[in-house]
Length: 264
Image 1 (cartoon, helix red, strand yellow):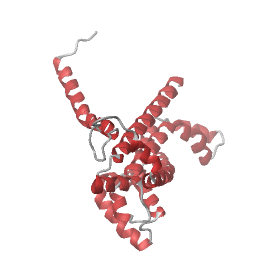
Image 2: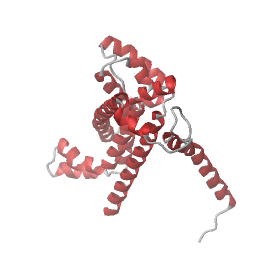
Image 3: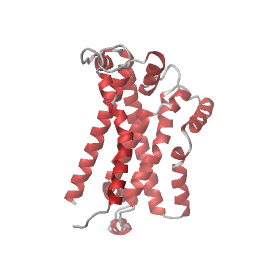
Image 4: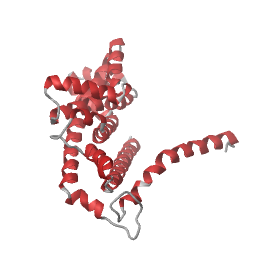
């Protein structure tokens, strides 16, 4: 067995220190969500679940969660479909124009959120999409596209182009080749991109502040108002649930990919 030098253990310790610095503050939210007080604090006398009950009993929180679920699901679906088609098209072309298209798809990540939020605001005014579900879904679809393109492109990089050529030589047209050969092969990348697109849409607040007012009231905006106005501990309950759901989704996706790899 190879003996590791002290440099390895120093780098390992630094890596875990950075991970702890990023992750441990999130865990503070969990005990705060069980507080028995009306403000953000640790439980004083007993553990209370009343703030979790507010998520169901209070129409303000319940409706904002349902609206966010609807918007995130629809926008993530559109992002996944369009991003997968873009990634497959660029992979199939494999030329300079495809690289320019990939770069264009990455602009929502490269450009700061405030910049493209302002661009959405100015454009949506002319199109009459301010404070509408169509405007929010369209903007979230554009924001989620890069994540799907990146994950699907990464999966396509491991695929032999001769598999597509073999399918075409056996009589399959391009649509059947994509549906029955390429999509199953890159399904892990598609699911990963869909998860990222859903999370980005669910968590987006900067664009919402620019393009929504009173008609569209999603969960991120409800959390923003809950922090700015009365520091409602229900915000901590929402954050704890979001952390838990995100971890479960990621663990399920990793387990599925592990099982898929084992079968192969």
